[in-house]
Length: 286
Picture 1 (cartoon, one colour):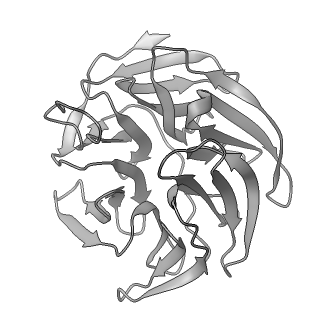
Picture 2 (cartoon, rainbow, N blue to C red):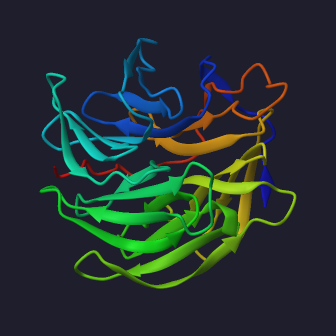
């Protein structure tokens, strides 16, 4: 295992309450990310430093590019679409009192795997669902507490998943129709090291996972061995994604919610240049 100290840069200095969901959009060469509790969708262009900000009408747990342009959003009451001209419409609306959308990811087949959780984080109150481009929704897991990181191996044969309070990164086998089976632990984050949050998978098939209250990000091999740790001064690291033209820069979102004396960088978008090499992510088929 190697430790990388604090070899990071500040991409965007921000005071996001709950920064989350970094996603590289290759169509625009921009990074998408969001602040869940302030209902804000951010974009960042690393080549120019240009930023944009859009407010949503509900708490937003994830934002991903769509194949035909625009964005898909995992909102409090379901899945919404933003068209390129800014028009909003619901794709799949399923409001549940006390519940909101959380992290989401796009599978190799273009479906959106969207998680939910209760605001009070009640055990088993969340779900993980698969939503196709036409809005058809199927519940994959219905006994989730805090649905978080989801990602696929480069060959699409494995899916990785985090339900944060379990402390585990789990792995599933992916069938030819895109459905998953044979859930089992890949790795467990030990007590005192934080809780696994968002994740991404690199070109070598290794899983990077952000550590809430763990002050960093870890890389696990496909066999579950811990082989790299990047430490950061911000305790609540929420998610990670590779970006940049060559997908070699690791972007990290952070949070300041619940911290009595937040670090000055808590809530900022951080980046570790040259951390590895990512895999191009598919756009949502809707």
